[in-house]
Length: 603
Image 1: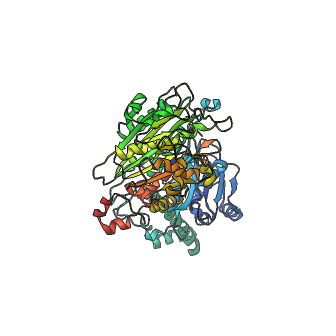
Image 2: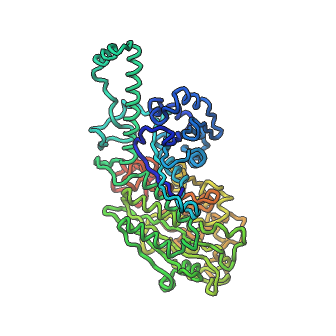
Image 3: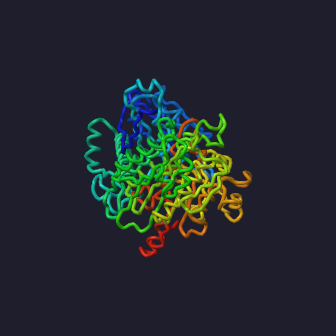
């Protein structure tokens, strides 16, 4: 999978499935809406219309099902027909599973994704998770050929049928207008010269009914192709309010961000140390024309970052705080994404056991997700100030390691008594959110981290846990998760009952709870919030992704799609606007003055 390139195209073109294997994927009632005239060019001469219809009739998803159409060269697979209210309507997790198990082998392959327009973003990100980039298998090094998977979307309407071409409009061929969008597109093909064509049909020996069948088939095929081309143009190119096309391609940038995050998380610490992570940050910065701010090693200690420095000071590769800043003209608010980047977590002197330490290369999942999301967000035209703050350290063991009972002064000015060196993520994030508030002037701070093992118990393997001081943003995170496939579920936010778990007799607080049975994931998040203050007037959101950051032994790139969807309204891209839970209707009604409130409003 490491040498697989993903391409999103309006039309993948026709090909014999024996030379270009094909996977057709979607919910069963959506698959039934795909006309044979649209897929026959990708299946013939190996698959007939009768075989296609027979395969659809045999599918019985529970929750999924698949049916081979021709040897191992063509397959149709069905997603769950229904999902529960806490799942994504796109069934994103099942998309990834089916692609991994059902996509035929080959160097040039095609996936035809059948879904509603609102599920296209989540489906694309789910497809990307099936193709991880990192591998050190010796066989992979010997295989030099580049493999390509071409993804084509066939979008169906909200009524579970194809989008009606009669509702699509476009001022000129191939160029979206200022008023075009998900419900607009190219006009239906006009059947000019019908009488002359009928005459030609009679000369060829066709009856009226025979000519009509051929004509209907021709127009149906042309209609489907026009619809698919327009749908893709709208998804990939997008339009601004002035009719200009947005720079870049949303699906490509989003999926590249997902795969970047997964590659960083999959890479072991002997390669992905703090130095290497900083190189990844610099590479993204160079791509975006941004020079990162980096504070390292003794500079951290001198400037008061006692949390990051205390966690990483025992490692060979020194800790660092790195910041990528995007400050466009006309921005009215400042957003900070703060990521936990523990490149390896031994637990420190409170060392982990032999069964719990393997896999701790994934403890940088929050920072990796923020790097991938930042890259995609800026490429899609982020309109507000956006800072990506990376708190990088290796929690190692050595003569300089932090000891239990040590007291550190953090950037917030508060002192912390260390009673568990394995509760290190909250220490680096406390410095990160304090910096975002004090130095960056952030109005909205979101921190993302693989923070607690208890998260997997609280919300499970598939749902991240969200803790926030805003009920509106709690609801927005849940809604964004369902729309993008990175599922989220709330934790209890109740500092007046929980924060006493950190009481210390000699410092402002301890770094680990007294009672591990008292909502430990919520308490860990509250520790971070305490360093900007529970009365801080801005929006603070904490996302714990400890469990969903990986599926089995592979990273998922979790968090990239969530951030892009949650803050989609700050982007110029229409597809991100579509999946964002943040409000545009209120913005239109209340005018520009209301933007000075510094908070995005929710629908």
